[in-house]
Image: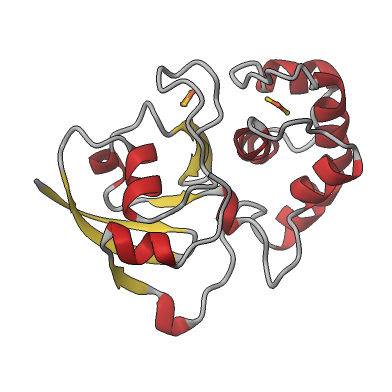
Length: 190
Ligand code: FES
Ligand code: FES
């Protein structure tokens, strides 16, 4: 077992994990962050995408120990003070989901894309999201949503990072977790 300390959605967690534990397993099973979903477990679908130090990664292709000392943002850390992140709002406005299974990963990949390219063309959006699959094939509205969100995210970035996690009360910032306790405290979609 290895000791790790990871900041996830603004809260620092210290845990013992097996060296083979994937980041997505750690997020879901130890922290109860079930908004990050597993679609394939083989790095193909992108549904498990999170931000690692602001860059999008497929969390089924990262070991939990590799996140030690780093900052992870999941779909559950995007909204701030009850307000949806601009990318979440744009997905809602553009009806950019059908079953919604790919949506957490699409949104996180979009945040990563807009962090690197604040004003992408439609072509660049399609290229930027090519690692994320939508089995409902709702790509057209997803692309529209990304283009809608881009200016607001850019504006937000001018003041603060659009991928910073929601602010947590000071009392919640240092946690040592067990899977059971964390799972009981989180209400994301499974
Ligand atoms: S679950 Fe990670 S890419 Fe599919
Ligand atoms: S909305 Fe169903 S998989 Fe994308």
